[in-house]
Image (cartoon, rainbow, N blue to C red; front, side, top):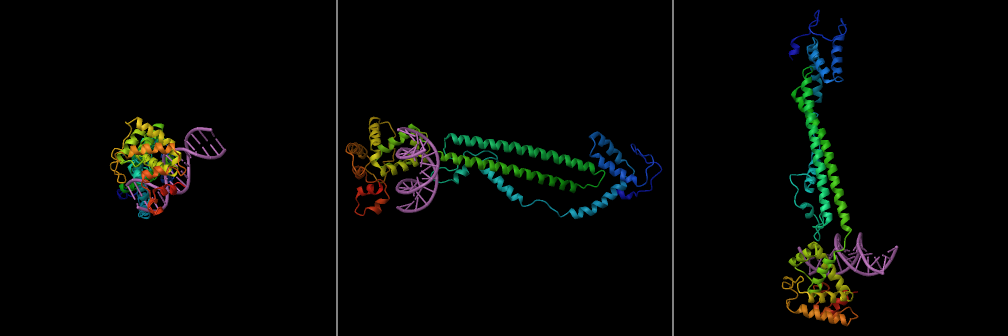
Length: 378
DNA sequence: CTAGATGATTGCTT
DNA sequence: AAGCAATCATCTAG
């Protein structure tokens, strides 16, 4: 405004300072054009050169007039610009991405123990998100996940740094320019906001990429899980020993399952799966398992240190007589293996009472235990 | 390559 | 929630 206080008087005979003005006596209009040209030229110059030129411009006699003209132009244009506010609906999307990265353990303060939210969302039988608690694949998964996290954080840091630098640079540039053209602090603020919005866009892309990487990793893991591996000999041994030594009630308690899992180097859910499969398959084709049965029963008879019931038998509702029934069964099994039964060992099934067989209530109205097996083993 | 074995998953029942 | 039954997908021995 003070520029307007000093109306541009007709040019004095000699300009107070026009140090590098090549034309000695320029035409009246060329003065303004010259100043503008110099302003434009500043961008093409080196810092030192520009500094000198700026100084020259600041002292130019036409500067106040030019400044007031720019003020007027700005006055008009700013009105039309105002009201165009940024910040779109992308903030919600950004929040979603943030949440997801947080849940995956890629971002956030500190990585949680085991990807808890993912496990919570998984199925009941196995912790779907993170399969083998002790598997190689899982550690590999975690390693890759943390690698993604590292890249994400370093990139984020880089972008933030660049954003800061660029913002301060632009702000100082604008402040500098405010000496030759009207730049309000508000305008600087707005420009800064625009810059931040741009960098936010970049950040969002980065977050999106991180999410995609995690997703790819996750689906890869799920694929890998399908590529099952047979249990180790040790694990199969431990499980079979328990199964055949508790043939009257092959339902290990939670503690027994944990013990078996620990001994076999597998998870509790794998133990559950194994027993589920085993019970079904044994029941379906007992004859096939008879040899295996004798092997393991002989083994456990010779080695009393193997995993005992540990309350599973005692706590079993279906077989209250836990004491000698196991041993009696063992001998029964040995007998049945000696005299193979064409129907798949109905003798055993009678002795056992058919475990926890669902069909029992539906298939045999007369309550014939043998029919359970014959119904199940077709 | 194939058949059988086996671990995992899914849908259902209790 | 645990278990059963069927099924899938992979492994493995021959």
